Image 1: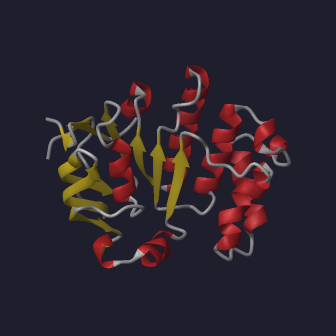
Image 2 (image 1 turned 90 degrees about the horizontal axis):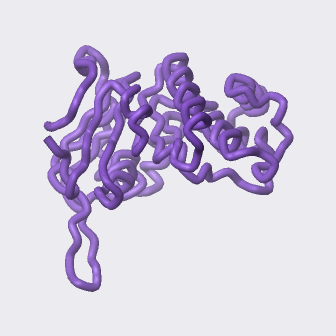
Image 3 (image 1 turned 60 degrees about the vertical axis):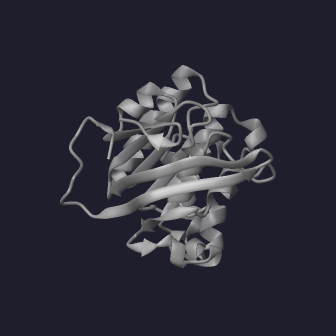
Length: 234
């Protein structure tokens, strides 16, 4: 498996993701299009992994497969020792509930809800009795205790991303998937978001899978996978 590493992976730790011979093909007007092929990848508890590559190299597609948001054409992903190929969409959602968080480049906040309500929503849907107190606590951690009653339109881009991060970490997930989390932010704001992601990672012991073009973000990760032509380069 080709990748570059700053640190040796913690082989004594629990593997939370294993991908083997992963491939994704789609039908296009001109024929079959191979997006990913022959992908082997692993992630350990508490580890941060960056997925890099040029636009169109399959990074977001790979993220979706690892999270069980999409099905591979061949190969498999094991998430928490469960083969995702053996689960339907509802089963994968149940497996992710309370264990997996998401942060996206476009924030994905609900515009009609306040920052507090956006963070509370997934916990309320999961039946969390202390959703409000947990949401207030994590919003304070991300430095937004004074903005809890503001809607996304009343927040800056950096503040919106911090709300999205608070929402993702509120349930104390075992894994957080982030797709270009600094992509819509200026350099200084992006740096603050990176610091926040990794401080919460350390505090909660969360594993991170980060799709990014940001070299500063990739450098903070334990290992890096580079996609080139739908395959891991190396």
